[in-house]
Length: 489
Image (tube, rainbow, N blue to C red; front, side, top):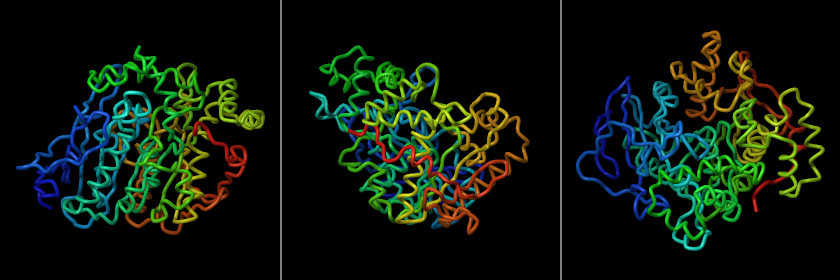
């Protein structure tokens, strides 16, 4: 494979490092600055000369340890591939972070281990928080603000991959999209986005939040908090076009602190139902929007432990809040049944509630719906380390990422798995990574040892120190949640 590649937009110089070729920081859209702030992604122009793809591009503007980092000019992607080989299977990684933080350059999700397995690894960057997922378009004076800017970035990146990856030795007809948390929600969103149909054939969704989609009207519940946190009025919103975007984090932080107390159970700002995403993913998938896509989806045992806190919580932390959540959405008559159900568990009721409400219940429903059209596999990550036990975090949200990427040196990995027997951690990691690789390459994560998922009482792979594929009965979970919907109007 040559270090200089000519794609649709021009020549790109890559670099040989660590036994692979890297092409980093490639622009896939015009910089979303100036007149393009709060506008959907615009196809990039062709360039003259050779683009030097030596380094990652800047991350999207965000708050990191109390400091504003990143840049508006952030729409880049990265390609890492083996030194040899053509027509390689392609994996596109969409990073998580609540549509609020994160970057394609995070070292935890470096693509090396996938490249070593003969995969062309692509990671994409997209606009976050206020610049990417706040919807101002329904306010007076903001008619020229686009909705779903961050979603449009993801769509444009997938279009770029579809049209250019063959120049880098990737097979555009063998693409898997993969993400965790908001990245996984982005994956499930793409199963419902009409304009990306045919751009990928397989999808891996780790700890998705499939219901984190709002209407324009519902989005105002959070945007009104942003306005309040900024010390602005609706009439001031057009000024956002020219303000220093670093100032937006003041309002963004205020939303994170207040949104649960205003509307318990509501999600932070994310994608909007509009022309890009006309039907909610759960409903679109039920009607066959992703009938040509194979799916691997799963959750962690204790997802909610990362999000339920005594103060500034991300999900309800009391029965009063849960009751208000149910009543606001027309389900007040289900309160006692839900309270009795969750108080029957030995673990903290509110963490379990958050796990099921945001992650487990919608993932099971989504898998059932997709299994009617194509192969779907389900997993559950239940490996509780010593750190998980002593901290009360359990098998928490994001704890599986280190194992999937076979990362041993990242500080997060050391914190979670550092006191475990290395051979045990390595065995679980090797298995998860191999299952992911096999799914990417063949559509089957473990040949005949992991049967597809097809119902509430169906086959699920349980990842633990003693991994097994078992029939897991989710019917009690489905019965307690029925067809209840929240914050969709």
